[in-house]
Length: 156
Image (tube, rainbow, N blue to C red):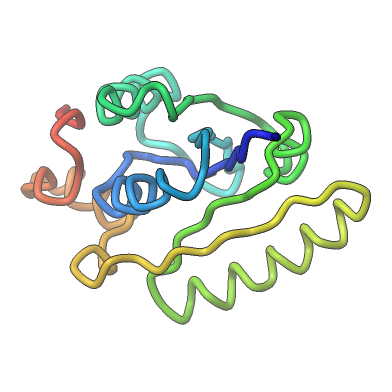
């Protein structure tokens, strides 16, 4: 029987409680989740990949048997195929995310016709649906209390 492997991609700059919520809720769905730190050329990252990887490792220390952390450049779908992942895990917070994710889904379907990579969407928990890394970075830049939006491992 094949292991059910999912890739959960993102910049995780920094990882938030919203990301954490999606991963923890997905643990029962998959045998392994690869948290994949992608290089988004449209964004200037605030934190190095090394620091983000360290935060993610600390955050999921208790789940290390089912969670792997990796990084990649290029298309997410290519990374999924390379890692032999059958699933792409995504979180949806709102209608804007839904429209964006729908377009990515259609594009990925066109790009990987020879490989089956099924996208699985989880809606954000209501209490986490307002959290995103852009807002957290803005809070950090302006000296606010960002700690209420990130796992305890994320302390600058």
